Length: 382
Length: 174
Image (cartoon, rainbow over all chains, first blue to last red; front, side):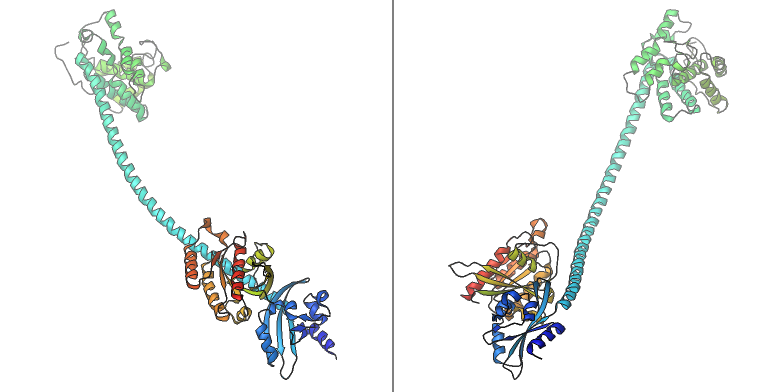
């Protein structure tokens, strides 16, 4: 078997390609050798410098020279990669000076298959490492963010507590202010009522008593507390218009002339004028204006009927009637509560709203309501 | 072989050694990360001043995973210079730069080195982390070699890295 045959056998079976290296560092490569490195056309049948054919050996000149002078030496450069026409190839370069010979051999050993397998493994390993690193970095960042978040939450809790305290303080302040405003309001309403009483001692306590009775009737009729409050205030001021009626008309015993009575009949309108510009949260002025209107249209000032009259005013009409009859008047002594209740029963569905009359009768007979006694009795006037 | 220079690229895996070579030799960049195994030699001629023949750079790209194993000694042997690369976004790669420098100094004493801090395009808002600034200062103070911030992706300062090492190697050769 010739060297050529041996080379062919070794290259095809073991993927090792051999070339003899001369002392001038040139080689005459075999066909298989050139084929493997994709160099056939360029270097075929030529004496070639090993550095031209294998530039990877550049830098190893010293080692090669050592190898030329000493036998039983090898130089191995592993896993060199190149791109050939058929794709990427990997190979080892081995320079060997066997013992007891003058010949130096250059071997190129193909490792492509093993290296591609190793590449796949290494690529996966590196990707996992980088992925873990990414996850680890993100975890550190997350932990940092969590700490920051916790600090922010603590700050927020503190701010919330401060805010709650402030809201509490402000609410208390507002409640106190509201109470004060309500007190001032009550006092103002009371003062307005008292201003009238100064001119007409007989009405002293009248508005208060009418107010109490109106509230009781309204509650019996299941009005909401806000409406009840409106009725209460309107009742306490319902005769405020009488402030413009000459006091002798109000205090003189005996019957009034028609003209005098017409003057008195002006008091709902005057009361409306006095109250209309006050911003009550209830329709106080309107209730006052309508408190002498009657269910059957017989009232004044407009002769409104039934549904045209506010229910609050219908309640005020009933309680005003009961209180007026049940207490002393300048022109007569009290006719008694019994009489007052009989009268409203008689007027039920006529001049007075039947549902209001029913509620009024119920609170006296079923609930035991007691009309409070007049606070002021002026002896000798009647 | 008069003007041939072997340059070895050293650095941890995935710091961008292959990308720097590819940007310099082919002016190309690939976003996909493909690990290098074994060694691949690229060549590029660099014009030199004073009417001297071009320098032929043989750039050795080795696998970062080979780390400080014995096979790497074989690759480093006979190098005229080294480009030691790190990733500015991975602190641990800077530690490896110091180790590679010590190894290169042992195998190729007196040969020049350029330190490349790559992937500057990934810095958040362009702010250099404190550990990178500290590393740069330490390297310059202890070795006297240049630290060059680069981005193989944008091409920023890539040419400068190779020109710097070529200049240092030719100066040492002269």
